[in-house]
Image (cartoon, rainbow, N blue to C red; front, top):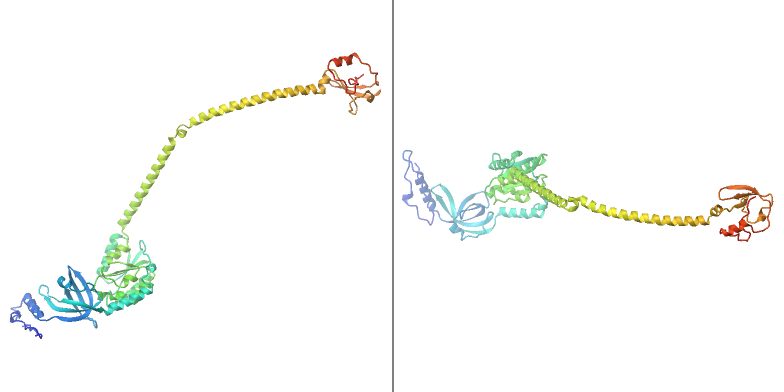
Length: 451
């Protein structure tokens, strides 16, 4: 037999007898609804209580807030609800990590047996101890440059092997594998399991990180965990883990919780993914998307080549349509006529020049012949000269018995001088004067004749 005896609370009226369940037995059990009604009636007898703590969860759903409040000195927590009507009267900057005091009243939901506290008032006291420690660590790491984007390593386009650190048989592991394989079926993983919350989280994650970082084939490391209470994610803001990630030579991707979760690992890692699913999409390229890109590039290349070839063909046709290329013989014909005219003119000028020079040459030849001694000899005159070649110009040069050589119009012959003759003009000399022979400048007449 089970009987619920409510406890009297000072200042509250005792519960009515009508809310007490009757004694129940195995033969006459009490229904769940009556049991929940009894519990709810008992809980409603409690009054409102002011409580101090740190907000560790603050989730907004449908205008209402569902969260948890943690004791500042220990691990005790309570669940609380803030209805939309009450939320409008509370500070608008309430968030996880705030140190608050709240007026709460216990409530029990009959339908699902859920126990919690409704908040009627809440105000800030100051940053919670954990948030304050995290903020101090954040400032320190930022000053050391661990958040600097310049030190973050770029992820490979297509990693050969992906290192994964996550909880064993976790939803995060399944999400990463499933989404990565959907994007690139040949993707390979090397998985190291570690506790993702509690005291073992930090040392096991660091050990897994060092093992994967030392593996030569691992190109990128993903640290993944599903969503949870911020209290359970504190391990991913631990300074030891953060410094180990900063010292890793392999790019590290942080995929912790959901979009609104933001441990310090997100700031130190080379890339922050909002969820494990997002991490798979950021690390592994989509084969269909890459094929589409290749197809687009090939189409653009074909279009550019087609345009270039079409442009060149059009230019070639335009060049070929020009008269000089369409009928090149026309230009040659016109030039041939010009060449023929120029050649004819050249021949005429050459002929005229030759004729002129021929006439000039004939004139010079005639003049030369007229002045040549041979012409004089041809008219019957002779030249006498001694054997030594001296021309006889004076009869005294050829005394008697002097051998002389006489040159006439045709040849020469030898002769001997009989001496000088008396100067008497002869008929021959007179005939020579009549023929136009010029007398000797000394007045001695023509050269002596041979005997």
